[in-house]
Image (cartoon, rainbow over all chains, first blue to last red; front, side):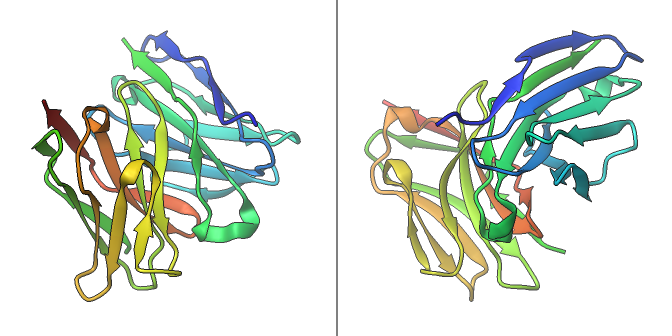
Length: 115
Length: 111
């Protein structure tokens, strides 16, 4: 049973550039959430996708956008990169019907460095 | 607003000693609480979760946590620490399907 996978593992960009991160959920899961984890901090919720629509959004600017595909995989896009966007980006998958009791399974993350 | 607070950003114990990592929550509704572990350069792995079925929750790797409503706490314990337990531990509360995390506690285990 494949777990959550993310690509790429590492990425280096310069300020002002755009980046796309990818996530494939755990087999059978239909909901994908994205989190940003700055160095030494707990993960912060960015947004959540279900049925190809953004269902919830955290306190992140519009530079952060996403997409979910019919196969439930997801992308996170960040435009006009800032130095402060440097972080570990985590994708998590879960089942919508289980609601807030369901476990979110995390991928290994993508380490983004903005120079 | 729902939130969690982890007391102590760093905890150090000797191998074989009791591990106690503290987590307090704030919630206006019955909370659903989780403990995750993160090893260096890896994602988060679920240790255990509380979903109101039982107040004492047993997880993987010998960890357990007790939900105490009167104290709004969900502390993580392990009777005997092992070197492999050294990692970052996060407490989280589920809010409409999204997780709100604490700041994390780094556990060091001394030989």
